Image 1 (cartoon, rainbow, N blue to C red):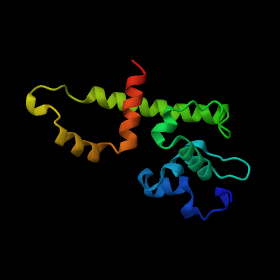
Image 2: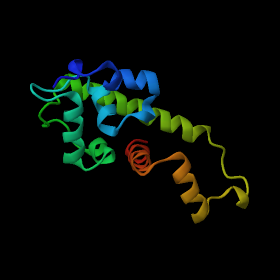
Image 3: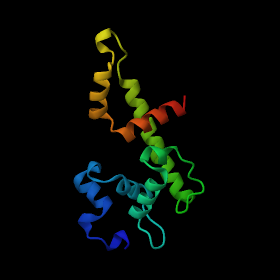
Length: 136
């Protein structure tokens, strides 16, 4: 069933605007970025298929998407633009973080687990590592 046939309150874009991006699943967020699905497959279903194929959001971001059915040049361009915006946002955040000025400011294993749980879910942490190491 096409997303346009869904009740308004269940559509990913409308839910994002009403409830925030955190209320959407990874597949629904991908659907918002992709905008459309394929014949007989909604954008959410396409998002689920991509996540299943590449195992995670991080796997999807690391993948070569040129030969993926349903991702033509326009959708790949949208996806690449979204990834680049995320990459730049993460880099800006890293630049804004103050340098270590004392041993107390260092990160110990206990702090890492607290920071990870607070600031970066596993997929986001993997993505951050990938994009910050991929470009100078």
